[in-house]
Image (cartoon, rainbow, N blue to C red; front, side, top):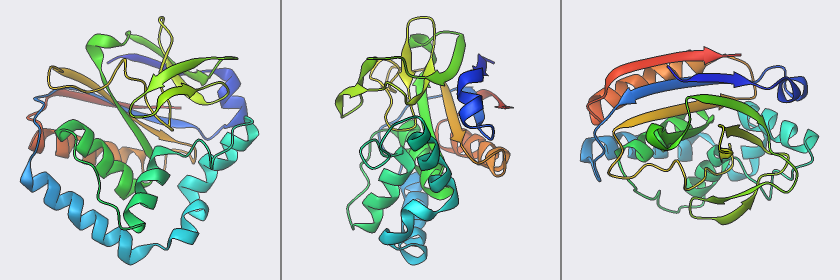
Length: 220
């Protein structure tokens, strides 16, 4: 398992911050109909359960937005990936299809309201710190161009930051060449639901990505 820690500076801002980290060997595929049936069922449930006006007050999203504000980051400009996904569904927009790993990532995020990131282990280090983005720090976000990650919660290795609850960088993105992944759940609301969703991730990865050597742990 990759060595992942949470910085004392970020923990001081959010004492409840919890990470659920899962590593696995996988087979990346473009499209799996059975997986998309699960995604479609979840999207229907979201439409039946939530109203667009209420999204910011859902506890797991509300707690994250509060941390963003404390760090000096506008959560309406730098939306959580989970919030963006739910808002997309409630606006009647189709969920984009990428590959089975990214689709599993998004399914868990939609169903749990936690922000998730999935990364190519070959392109990130073995020692990772969840910390606060440095002054003037930027990276190329997937589908976003240059993203200002100063004062965002980020995942960083010895090279620099590569992920955040808003948008991950292109450096660690999942392509069809990926063999080993790190999938990371980030909760600003404590560990309630984290282990449950790690179990869910394990099931999805084994079912739809032929995952082997699956390991996970919770980091406080």
